[in-house]
Image 1 (cartoon, helix red, strand yellow):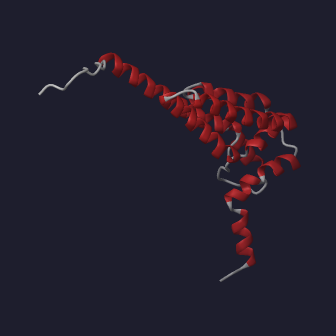
Image 2 (cartoon, one colour; image 1 turned 30 degrees about the vertical axis):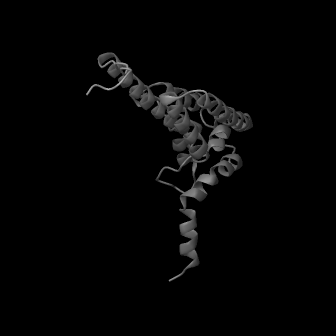
Length: 178
């Protein structure tokens, strides 16, 4: 039946609570990640396949999982602000907050002035940032963005190739032939 111990174990294993507690855990432990590895995990997202070059674009998650005292064997979701703190201290938290606001605002302004594939790609990036930033480290968030950009570029290249191979003829004006 019901047991307080079972409830406590369930709450300890409840992933959203672990995710939200990452910032507090990082602050309490004054955790500091290896700065070059932290920056490489973010900048490495410029590469199409970072793992082919030995770049871990999920460094924050790996770092935090290893730091957790409970012996967690599964990966936790990230925490945007905890990743900023672990990488760059309080400055990182402030810098990521400013980046988040400016990036979403910039994406919105630019998406409103564009159309087609560009608008779709920007909208997907903005939605991904707005929805998933709270439960991902900055490195993992950029991994999501990289994947959206790669798909957008692939669709754009295919579209240009088809346009070159099968040029669209303008519709004839006037009455339709019978």
